[in-house]
Each structure stands twice: as structure tokens, then as C-alpha cells.
Picture 1: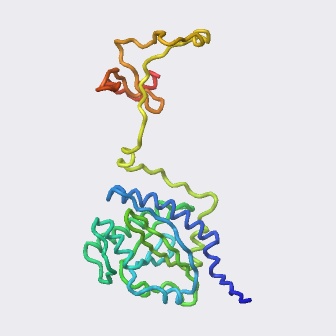
Picture 2: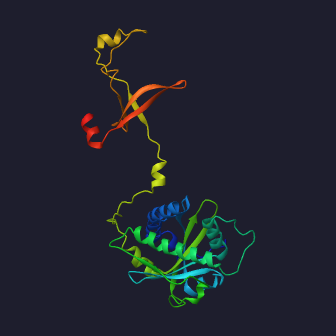
Length: 289
């Protein structure tokens, strides 16, 4: 029987660091998505992918020199290399620009427009991860120049362990991957700041476009009448019941159980309808209720 040697480096994908990082990505995704929804009309979500750990030199050997990359520095002094395959990165930029994606792989340098958008993408990504931080205190990230070939950067010694973490961008028409390259020890120190007593992020205001599409139910109440159990049991078809609503006064419209409008009953075509007569102020509605 052939036994496969166990690679202890693979345990990085299952330890607490990986889970804490995924939680961080999940929280940061909401801020990143909100920005691009406002800017482009649709959201781009972030999702943590695979986590691998190996020596720095062996990791670099598997990274193409054509990949786009940038050195990121956190306010704690942690240095991280962000890199992405050029083809996937260019497809994501095309999606944001609203232009057709290249039919064949294009290894040429980014155009001026693509480069400007890439810098904006990188900037918003650092902001989102700063706002989405779920650990103790606060954290900020600063990105360096975006350039090709991650091998140019000197992060740690060749034989030191480095974690490679995948972060997926899921857009309307494409999915792209960006990878974090962070020293294993630095990752552990950073994730140690994420404990059980996680700092709650400040509440965010959803974009007006999202709020505007939330469905609400408007209910108009014709009137009320208190009945005894005897009267209720003796109700018959065709029987008239006098309500407390006067016909010369507008009815009340309710949203989520709160009085919000005064309105008149009527007809529009073959359907019953109401005409809004007035909008109740918040205090007025509360007292009216």
C-alpha cells in the first residue's frame, strides 16, 4: 500500500487563522459591494477562497511574471503582496467599464483607462478591508504602485513560510481572483487580534438605490366596529354594519402598522382605489394611532 506523505503546510487551510480571515472578507464585502453598486448600478461581492502555505521561494516559482501586483502595508506594519492573474484582472476591469471582455488572452500592458480604474479598484479594496475590520482596535491599509511581476517584491527570506490566500471578486458577468501573499507568522499575529470580543463595525447607511427598491405594503382601513360574541354569531349575508368612520372624513393609511397617510376611497377603472389627501408627520401619526 502506497502512503501519501502528509503535508503539514496544508493545515493552514483549516486552522483558526483561515476562519478569521474569511469572516473579515465577508464583513468587508458589504462595504466594497455598496461602493460599486452606487458607482456602476450593480454589486461586486468578495468571497474568501483557498488558503495555502509553503516556502516563499516555492510560492514565487508558481506565480507568472505577467500577474498584476501591489505591495500593501497595514497600520500595524504588516506587509502583504496582492497579486492577480492579468487575464482575470483585465476581464474584471472590462466588466466595470461596461465593455466586451477580450475574446483571447491579452498580455499587453493595461491601457491608461484600465490603469486608472485598477488604481481605484485597489484603493476601494483597501478602504473596504479597513472598514470591515472585525478585530481589536482599528486598521488601515495603504497600497503601493500597481505593477506587473510579483516576484519583484522582497517580502521575507526564501525559506520562510508564507500563506497564499485567495479572494474572489464576483461581478455580474465574471469572476476574478486576487491573492494575498502574507508571511505565516504575520498572518497569525494579525488574526490574533480577532477574538471572541470582536469590535462591532459602525452601522452603514444603505445606498438610496437599494432602499428605493424595497417593497412596502400600504393598508387602508375602512373603519372599525365592536361586536359582542352574540352579534358575531348571528351575522348573516346582506346584513349592514355601521362603522365608526364618517363618510365626510378621510380614511387612514398604514405602513408597517403605523399611520402614515390620510386618503379618500374611490374607484379607478374596474378596481377600488384611494386618493392620498395628506401625509401624516411622524409625531402626528404616533398620536393619531
